[in-house]
Image 1: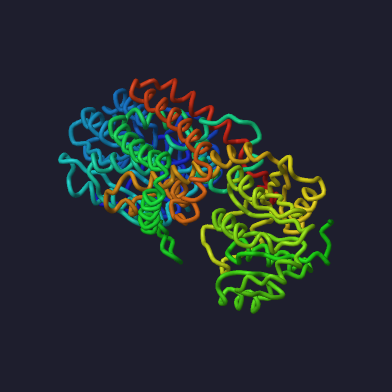
Image 2: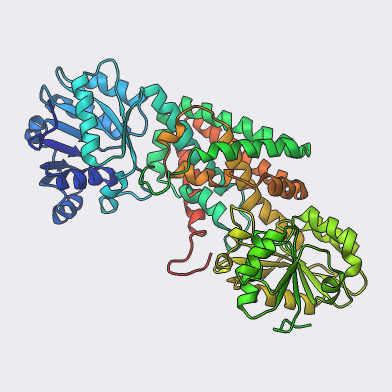
Length: 291
Length: 291
């Protein structure tokens, strides 16, 4: 199967990410159906012209006629949905997801697939701090990364279809990673940063600090405003990789603390020179929309 | 002494902060002289119309005729300068500084003051990532905090003069703090954040991470690009307060790690709810230029 404007796309879960997918795909000329929990989210999406049709029912006819199903649910909700409803998906259908962790999700979902249904997992790396369809915005895909996470059970055809979906959504860079590489990378770049921000925000309750704060503290704690339901789930599903990164960070932080305690100025400066030169690589290229 | 347009202001050290002071004060109609190391910085400042006069010499006549001297030097350079040249400052002169740490600096400087010269310390909380007069910019004072740090040895007259200076520079909020409170606050809000950013940047050297990074990692490591000479000096001058904050952070981070290891989802969510509600207080007020 190739992605064409005739491909029947069904999005399950119309939150901030499902909504952003719907907006992008409808703009591109696809006809998008949606199943979600709240009628008001469907009403909103219809009023915004984001979807062709929507329902709050588990409508067997829509599920059974879709060519491509995008699950924009939290990982455990996705797994629970599949346990109950996977039998409704027709042979030949490709399903994909938006989960922020992969190893634990993919193996569970693959066990639940009916004969002839293929699951190709993807991670659209375009987070938002707010949740809900009203905050959906497909412009966040511009300049962002879309990572396809194939396993040995995937066909090249489905992988290419998933990559085409990423391009149709407007992502800047489409890559392939193994589930293990993806999860290690996410543990470091995304989950560890959230653990640090939460801990920094919680480690000092002195009053009036906000009166004196500058931009550096604000930058480091912006993501301490966090969706606790989603992130606690993602942390647990990636527990081992995240613990590994937390330990590596603690080791490095303790080493810096030891240099300060020993008043080893040269040692601290060496650490700072290293961080300065490494950070250079992470600058956004000037005048580009690249991430 | 009151701050008037006739007050003879001398700035010692024309880097990014001294330059920003010069720009702001000259715009306000003060006549600003400057002593600094490099002739090219003086040439730049004269061409920009930032100062009335400048010299690279330790000109006794300028030092001896100034009413208000602003030391925009690194703390140890400031102390060294005073050891050599404090005798040139005339009776009745008020001197101030821009140092990011206070306890260690103020006590040292007060020991070096000639009879009749008063030192009132201040911290303009408007940092820049770049150094050098070419990056000076007085617009960073708008919306920022200016903290005056009096001791028992200061007169109310000098404190008020220093506060007037903060207002003339264009700061948003002028406050008074004790040296101990200031240093504890700075250890948490500014120095700890830099230690975290450096350690986060250094704790994982896997290649190609920059290809997949998002804004949260960029936000947390922006200040990992760091002026190692200045920050290592500031850390050492505030060693005990910073070690205290580092320990508090490590304790909180370890507690979060233990919750994850124990798969205590409710415990992690509680930490996240706390960080979310605390972080709200740190948001900049909408539509204001307040920090």
